[in-house]
Image (cartoon, rainbow, N blue to C red; front, side):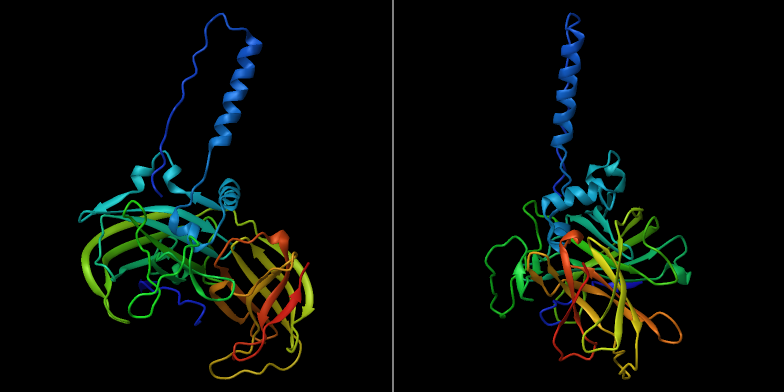
Length: 363
């Protein structure tokens, strides 16, 4: 799939390099064995405790993740932090004075989130940085099994809060520009940009887990207008990334009807960053040329009563058999979720719009 910065529209309208310091512990020959073992254990425990997996500003903000969540997903293999790799320099590509390198990869069952650090590319004040790139799964870009659904944009420091309103991911007070829009914060403290790609595997054609993702940036520029693209730098920044093999997806049996519809949720496949809701049709489905009439996942209610109604962040909905007796709604999340804390799903009864959210308890 080729895209020119297809950024995900706001749902309201619906790293720095790690310093490496090695400590050398020198033992005198006369040191008792027992004391040596204790000291070695102390050094070992201290080293383990000091490891911190920092996803970088872009991925941290994009998935609204806490430090604890970042540690957990990285240590379980669902996330990869490239600056931690010994051979990280081999992943950095420099062309036309601009260096691009993968930063963080996070996967769900059918979704992947990839961030790239971009150094040496500057745009004017008030300009929106943009890029031309293409990406595919597998080894043959001409094979339909390589196709993916995807979108990407330069991280702007913005997120969507629990009320569906635009806010800064760092919690600072929102600033409004002269044009009436929220001012974006594209650059980090070191003057670097971060490009975020979100992709979804095409059902029946490919898979995310363990696959190879090829990404090639071919042009860097800006969006001077709503739909225009202006090229600044043409080059070639090519990457082949092995995606994680772990998604930590759980299958939860539900077998409950969606209120006000003829759909029954048979089960859900849910990971900390994505969900697929599996439906069985129990009656007639109201559909039109543009709408399928299938319920759409939008958020959660947690066990402590917290409502998160605007978690869904792109995905797909459709029937999964020719008889249209089964359907599925797959969605990425805009944050990392603790699955054990989820009590209910929040859904739109259909994709026509205008209706009220409904709640279905799952555990």
